[in-house]
Length: 212
Image (cartoon, rainbow, N blue to C red; front, side):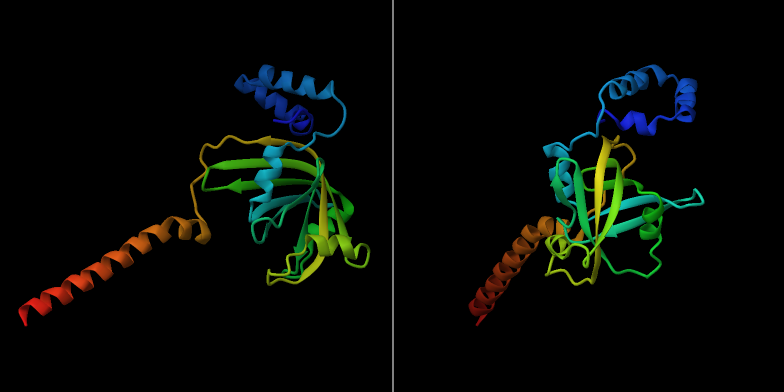
């Protein structure tokens, strides 16, 4: 848990529930430590490497009516870029043209991100302030975030100024694996199966030759 995560997440209502369940004192120390250290929390190499390996994440924004909205964002591993110790960004692809997240951010820039690694049961939560940058505003930035090998229409870039983050408990994360992850595990088995089939074919030929 970064220093300022508690200052954002642990509201009075949250602390009241923590008090009911006996965790207020422990998390109260986290809250006090964050309040004593002003400024946003920098990303470490652990967070940077982790984000750089992800092929998707969940983005939560808040509408002007107060309703939260959660949107999945995906792409090739590495589409999330760490621009510096406090900023992450990605190319925003064309979707169903609802623009709910984009609209919400234009009114309230606060967002939350959950990035999951199902295979290793890891989960990173991030609080930050998002801003949308169009190609007209900064074509070089949008180009730098775009992967020309990925088949998608890029409409804009999204940058998030990270305020705080937390590595969440891995309990109850069901392991799941991508096709690429399964392929790397299955490739040796396929090679072994092919070799066994070839050997079996040679043995059959030798057996048939011996009968003639």
